[in-house]
Length: 510
Image: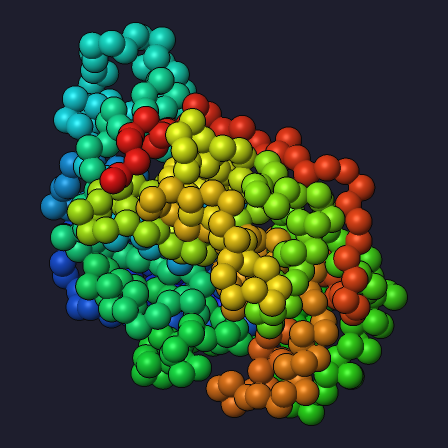
């Protein structure tokens, strides 16, 4: 057994051993610290599953660190460099930008599944800079780029290990050095997938085609993907390819939010009893609070979580009214959710450009203001490595009791958005926020409905997912009320990144 530097629980140590065995078959031996060229093993997957607080992320991070220390290169999706026959690679993936950013905030170099499925094509001249930054070539001489610009690129790369970010720091735009995007044709090596409970069958098949060695990390207590029949992809694996992590109290730090989440496993627990547990927790610990109303300030950056779509629309309408949002437009600082990209097949490159920048379905975005072209919006993509961009937008604001949404801005085609001040608990999976408001009347309605999913009352699955979205503080809102904001909406809290790549210089596709 490999001996990691951290102290694992017994089941974590067992999972570590199983993961080590799988990696050893592929030629990456953590026990003997040896690394063989790829191609020696057989296609294999292992799922490591457990509820919130069981240590999945700790295990993933430690395994990734061990692989890097052994000489395995991390593939980011930004740029891969020259292929070598003996090169071993690791990609650490999450289904959404937000989920990937949660890992990155913990020091794990994660990217989205989409950024691995589609890879950038670099202009050969500027690829010389990428090779130099990555230590695979000599310092180049590029016409139009000064030594000072190259020095800025080098300094940025040393701090952030991002080729696009480094080139942007040198004063280049995305269209200068990326000529397009292509679907990955050649397989990679080792893949770690966090939040794998969110994967659908098609995504799992894509990943199995790309990665001969695949480790899935997921929470079996979350909500299954829509139209999956209540099953998650790791449920299809044989029992011999699954490891279950159980909760370790010392790792959860006596967190009352996790205590509440794990209490939902009691089959005899009723909704009223659970609410009393929340009330008791709120009396003992400031990290749990009972709210008599939804706080509008919090909705601007972390959506209130609901079950029913009608509740979502009513809360969004109340949020906009509270801030005095105009009927014919958006205020800078209003939150949005990307609902997909509406572009015909002939504009596939444009679609890939937007998706590669983080505008995939479900991405959380803050509206910054109108773009320089009609129908364009300046946006901040939450969790993206390069968050600022301007893109053709179709923004839809749903209103109570109206079948058709109000559309304040619309390009002929582009990224579509819904308002993000409130979201359904299903859509919140894979995301976490420091503070989360859960709209309890909706969960009470789910309990009264008596619905069951995968053998468990639906309200318990909803409650589990909702409260575990809170990293630090949980607000359990009990009434249909909205608090008035104390200050106007603002974008001052959004950190300005290094010089951003811009998509606005391209004409809107017609």
